[in-house]
Every structure is written in structure tokens, then in C-alpha cells.
Length: 252
Image (cartoon, rainbow, N blue to C red):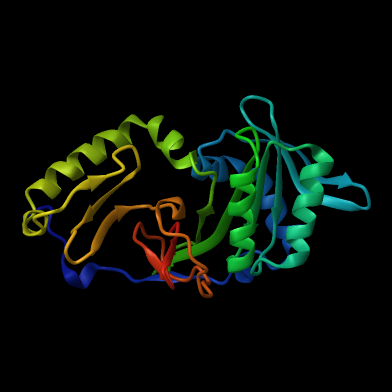
């Protein structure tokens, strides 16, 4: 009885406009991000240490220059609006100018074309070069203080597997989840259900007759049939489900 929660006590989660928290990108968001790189690093599974803000690259200025735990150069380009061609161009200029190993682009949400470019770069470059697309969101529960949330929407193909493998608590959680799934009526109702991709941080049950797919946790587009998705604005609260865009799905 003590663990039960009354329905009347449940709260409502609300998304907060980024500009209400950080009115200006250069004078508000970038300094805040520099002081909270640990939170971004936690989302990426990378230890980040800031080395310079507004670092010069030719006639332009990179938002944040940093290093990872191995001393590799990391560049971070951010914007408080939807991704655009101008920032994509800047990102590539800064990556080349700083000879960066880790390239992080932060935006409110990502155009499909820019999402595809980052995916393509990860596929075409070596394992020493990593491109990340991170959507910055702010959420509030009722009248609570706003809470930032970094949602990784683009990552190297092997990033999630390597990242999760270093987290014992996740492995314990996944084991318990799979044990519960085995006891679920849904699990047994699908005769041909199989657990695929055991090394990934999600469990996918696929019925060979209906081709229905149930997923728990995050998913990478690398496991889906390539397709050109329709527009996606990343809207919706933080979740671990799938967001469909045409016949493809993004990390969500």
C-alpha cells in the first residue's frame, strides 16, 4: 500500500521554450554549456573538459573547444534553433581547422537532411572521428525549476553498444527487464518471436507472420531498412520508444 501513488498526485510534464531559459545563444547558452559539459558528456558517455570558448578558426569563432579523457580535440557547435545549412558548414570548417576527433552539433532539433549528413559522415570516416547530433530540450514538471535534457539523435554506429557496455547497472537492468518480458503474455502470444541484437541496449521482438516489432529502449537507424524519412522535429517528451518517420526511425 505504501508504494502506491494516487492518480490525483500525478504531475504534468511540460516542454519549455529554449529562449525562455537562454535568451541569447552566445551570451547565455554557450557560457552555461561550458560550465555544464559534464552533463553533456554523461549523455554521450564521454568525459569532456572545456579548454576554450569562442575559439578562433580563421575569421570565425567556434563555440566551445574541449578535450576528452584521452586528450583528443573535441569541438562543440551549438544553436538554439532548428539545424541549418550555415551551422553545418561552420561545423565542418571547425572540424577541419581544429583537426577534431569528436564533433558535436547541438540544436533544438534537426532537419532530416542534416541528420543524414551526420550519419553519412560517421559511415565514411574512420573510427577515430566521431560525429554527434544532440537535441537540447528543457522540461518542467508542474511549477518545478526547468531541467535541461540532452537527447542524442545521431551517433557513430558502434557508439551505443560501446557506451552501454561500460555500465554494469544498465546490464543488470536489462537482465531484469528480459526476465519480466519472458513472463509477459505478449511475449508468449507471438510464436515466432525472437530476441535480436543481444548486444544492443534494447530488446526487439519480431513476429514473422505479422511483421510487428515491439521495442523497449533506444534504437539506432543502422538496424533499420534505409529510407528517406519525412520531416521530423524531435517533438515529444524524453522517452525510450520509437518515432516513426516514413519507413525509418530516429534515435529517440
